[in-house]
Image 1 (tube, one colour):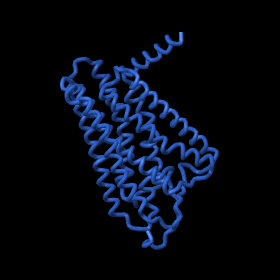
Image 2: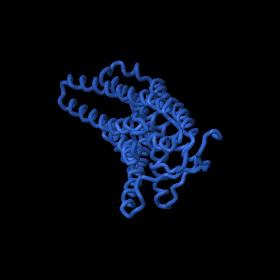
Image 3: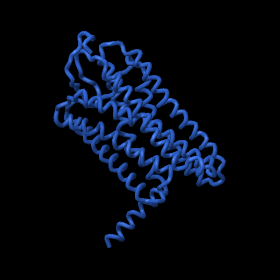
Image 4: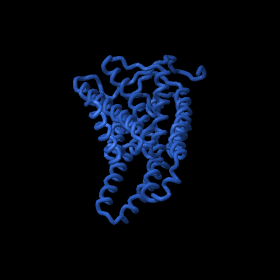
Length: 314
């Protein structure tokens, strides 16, 4: 660090936040906090439901449980700090705090990208090759998919966090974002980060473009299989499920790809913050609804849970 000229040695950063301080901003932050509470509640309930009902002890719901854990950690990593900063007026974050946000965020973002691809493969096998499903999706296979998502995501995050934090930050250490995100931090660096950005593109290929292509191919095959179904009701239900899944996938991958696979010079703070809302705040609240609460097995498990609780109270 001593070799870099003209940079400040202050270890704190300032997060400028999502909105400027104004009465109107309070409404937006209140809405974000409500979405945060909803997201944590929905995902926690899904974890409880999957763990308590033996009929949901299948590979699909095992992967969904890990998705819920990732979503809870993700919104908890960002929203409480963001709302607290707005209410207190103090927007500083230490170098260690910023590094932790970057590490946990990239771990969960990368892990979720791989996990969503694993979930699409699970649906592909279940619908297109139902007779081979018990063989292809054994318990160890789903455990390997989930564990691999966490481990590979954490490894990738460790590398990027270490590289990002070793860059010197000159002059203002004000991050024009609502959390410490790599593209926003790179704009503060006073050295050429072109080579590192090339590494970000490689990671983008591995964690974004390849999984997204696999998901698209899986759902494409699912649609072709559904078209061959004789029951119009089954086709309608399957199309509805696939379309909602793809909408959430596009909401997650689209902004994520647009943010992390563009050169630093093309980034604007307002645009980056708007796009980040989708993959950090909105999709964690939508995932339980789209992937779980619209599923007949989950609805039946919910009814049984409520029924048993009602009978117990009587």
